[in-house]
Length: 484
Image (cartoon, rainbow, N blue to C red):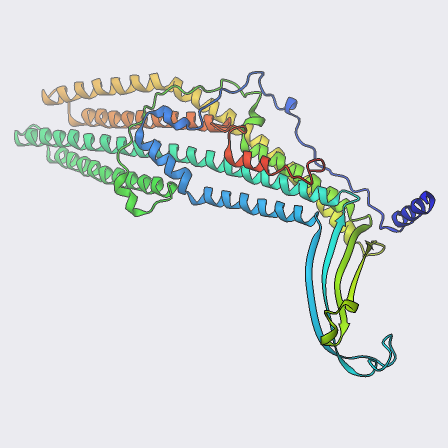
């Protein structure tokens, strides 16, 4: 008995379309070739923004992670991927259907049905329960299920990456909102200073100590300062709009967003070198890895198409000629047996699918490599920016202090008539610029610290991320624990 079975198997396999020698071309970057340090990145709390100790940003972060359309779209993609996984698992299980039909037919005189039925019009009907079961000899269905699971995991990691990106975008926009408020403060203070300069210049002009040109110059500078106040107010409003949009709210939320009050100098435990566990900490890199695994399983499934597809089919029901006979005992029928589909010639269709699956694997590897290099680039840039901005801070503060003293001296000399208006105006402009640069430097330093925190994974933890845990839990199945 074994010899005929073996012979049949050999014949089936020899009759199949031969698989091509298509091999993947891309190779994933090796971690030890990336120049990562030996130290791991510090771990952050999932709600890392609470370190700023600002109740308003805590409230806005909760709204962002609950109502932002981008995150809702990512969660919908998880549900879609889970539905595809359920469909793939269903295809690997027995399928039972109940079918029935009744037709008015003219039976042929020269066919298998003899007279009096042959050559006459009769009702012909059948009601049957049908069973089909794809016997997964070559592992195709297991590969399809594995690919679907990897896609679920990738979608869950995409959601984690979206959550991380949104929390970072909110924090950075929130800091920009604070900077807009500070710029508005500086602009208002400049208006007060230039009003004082105009008053002083007008007094000197009235006393015959200054010319009309100096008065007009002071008026022009005051008008420019008032225009800057309006400009900074607009920038503040634009940032309010951006914050509201991130939280998934409309114009009704604008009035509820007040001046930020974060502790910008909050110490965040940031890495000093490219961390050794960078690749394992970022959800976008892990998602790219999952897509490589999904593409590899898709290639396995495409390779299985070169082998015979064997199904088990069965039916049980009733068949009869004549309506009155359909449900009679003599109309009962049943049957069971294998069904084999053997690809012999398909004009290259299966080979093309296999080549396409191999190309998809190469594309997934290339995407992973690009994500890794981008992550390293982003992290290295953020570390450089944080270090540079921190070192600039003391020099910038010295500039502000010196500009304040210079303006006080210039005003004193102008009041006493020891100099003209130009040194005082130059000193005032220098102080304005120094103040603006100092506010921007502090804000940018905070933004870059947030960027660095996000670039090493932020508060993402695969062991506690709810969508990812659900995706992993969906991997287990009573019928596929071994194969998946």
